[in-house]
Image (cartoon, rainbow, N blue to C red; front, side):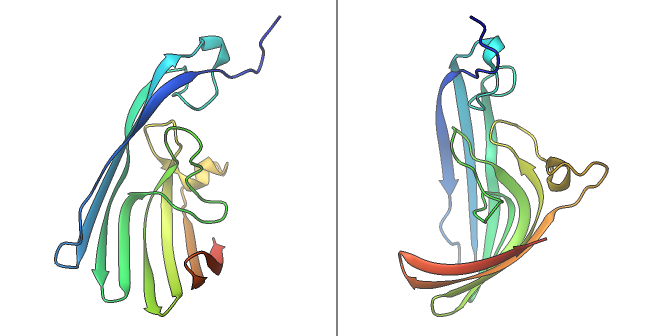
Length: 167
């Protein structure tokens, strides 16, 4: 029988992460490397996204960012994971999606968080390079990112409500 459209692979891997503490209660750095190493992956069954296209193993720097804290304000810039509606890590394989961008959040009122930011690029989980957010969305000939603003109110550690706008 023919196996048209059936993706198949087996891989092992994981992540190694280095995160500093807050230096002078001001600066923190984080770096995360990911790897997915092929155990088996027939060339005619490519597409499972556990491996790079062509059923190849990979190792990649996924996160590399700095955070700066000033009172209730925390600013972040670099490569990072994001967890917003429609824009998120989609962490179902060895490596999550990561994004290049910058933003800040404010934790000034008890239980209320406000945040704004801009994401210029995305790196899909089994890729080694970033591409424009607009190109990934299918807009050809345009190189634009996504800006967002949102708020979240925490009723308790396990219960919250929020709203976010993405442009």
